[in-house]
Image 1 (spheres, rainbow, N blue to C red):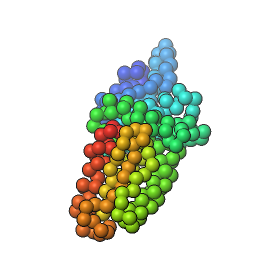
Image 2: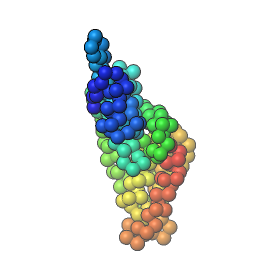
Image 3: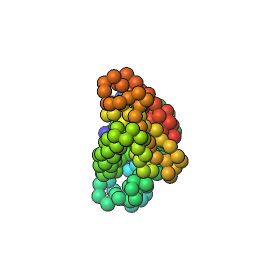
Image 4: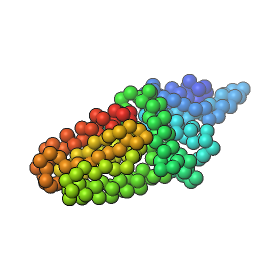
Length: 225
């Protein structure tokens, strides 16, 4: 939103009144000085996790010589950042390796500024959404194998965010199963196994669903954040 005043402070005061907040950041768009009147145009916005994230990621894109649209959305204590554009494969890297590093850097900056944000997620050109679909298929195959053999299924080494998704998928879709992470990066991986005393994905296990998600919430999440 742009605001006009005879000085930066006057334009900024209009912005404060408009937003009803003193927590603003601004950028001077233009400044004209005349004999009778000065005119300053600023662009002002409320400081928020979304605005800081969008500016941060946009600045990083510019520094890398890339262009793209950045959209951030806060849901409760989580911040989701989406980056769209062309020729952004460098932000993803081989098998998402650079995206994992990029996300970690952005997460660190955001949480220094906004400690109340518990989790930051960055997706580039819907790479993660496509990968999640593959992970869901992988979990389904592992669950079927474990149900048949009664032995844990061990998945290949994965990035941190991929392991988080595996834990989430198991916890939400397969209440008779549990998952845990084993090993150390870069070879840390997830095992999927039947709950003790569980013979099927029956509704009776729903009450212990929080237990299936404990490793995700306390172990994997702490490691990633």
